[in-house]
Length: 231
Image (cartoon, rainbow, N blue to C red; front, side, top):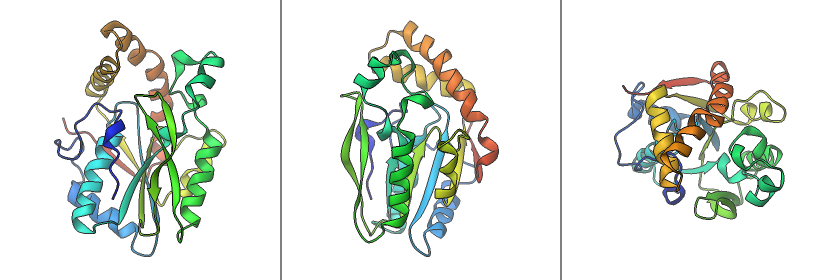
């Protein structure tokens, strides 16, 4: 199993932190995930708004899966398909980094297809490096032994082309229905940890990220399962 905690972007503490989502229980969700991979490789999408805790949830699920069936699962992320920072700057989109048009959707779609189809050889995934503010190619190994690939991302259920094709490549998609205020608080803390002033962190959270959140919330009906955040 691979955990990608070194470049976390949700402001949480990892697989040993308290669960954010508890209905169904993590035990029940683990069993559901294992069932997906019973006949071969399965792709499980974890979807949610910025600050919903997608990486934290994926790590907690993977930690539980590792106890049940060591080596079965691996986590990858849509974040590895951020356009290069220099490209975003050249396009005048620095203030909007993280919006749907600042990702390589076609590249993401192509690697999802490879991951589904190429089950007898390793497929290498990129990983977003927060220190570099860029993706690093070939950072995550999806090996033949990995029968469950957990994919997290904001836009897995988006209906724009080509994003709308992603759902058919996922065996299931789970939407993390975060409570609004805790989600925004996590985002603000995250940006402050990146060096934003509290004012700038709040402005980004309540500005561009709220636009993105609105788009993502509109995709809830496409999810196979909606998980409510614990209050």
